[in-house]
Length: 162
Image 1 (cartoon, rainbow, N blue to C red):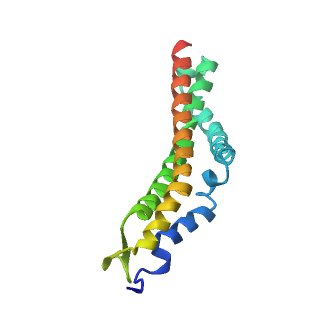
Image 2: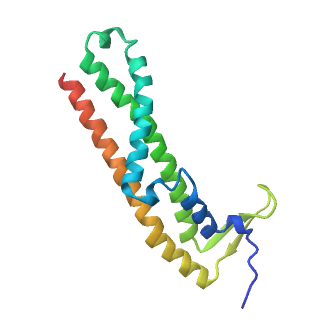
Image 3: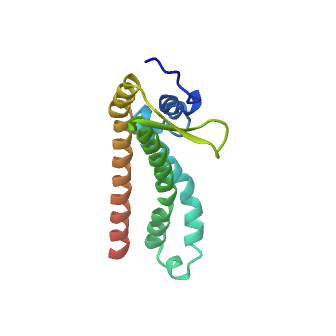
């Protein structure tokens, strides 16, 4: 049975995957682990001067420069953490769509949602993409999140020790 696919091309899981792969923001973990690290480090470095300025407004921290710098560095981790969360949400959404046996789609607007069952050959192809291309990206994001947690825990421990 050769059924015509009613799902608009831009709502198909493989198309959504390709869009993420080519997106400026979502391709960070696809290119290489160093690309993701570099981008997150840049976000942290851009946020650090602002957090230093805010932390210097604290009377108690103003008299303890090491604690001021550590507090600002810890606060600056918020931006990379938010960037990681957004990355995770985008990639897990596409992975769910690739692994699903049915495709939820909208024909003309938000009010007319439909579902279409993927043919077997689509499911097989989507499963391969999910396992061999999306899963490694999610693993990189998870490792980056664990590193952020370790840095926050280490910074908090150092701040407490001072």
